[in-house]
Length: 93
Image (cartoon, rainbow, N blue to C red; front, side, top):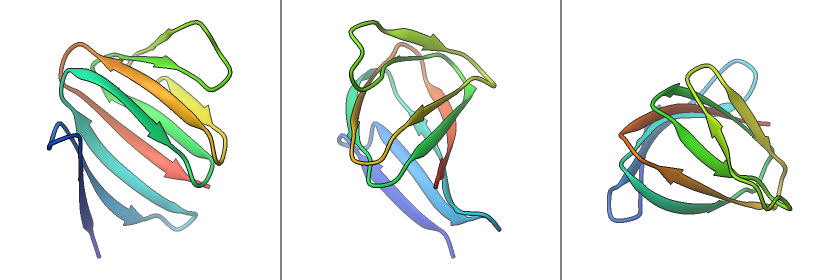
C-alpha cells in the first residue's frame, strides 16, 4: 500500500512504496532549502529539475540533474537547495 508523506509545510511531498528489493519513495520538492536525516542508506535519483546538495562531511555544494544519483549513508544529515520544482526517486537500503 502507498503512504503519503509531507514535510516542510507541504513543500516536500512523497509517496512511499515497496520495490522487490527495498522500500522506496517518489517525491517532489518546491523551491527552498531543506535538511534531511537518514535512518538507512539512501540512493536519491533526480527525475526532473536540479537538486543542489551538500553531502555529509562536505563543504562544497554539487548540482544533481535528471538521472544523476547521490548516496547518503545511514544516520547522516544532508542539505538541499531547490530553485525550481523538482522530482526524485529514493531507494532505502
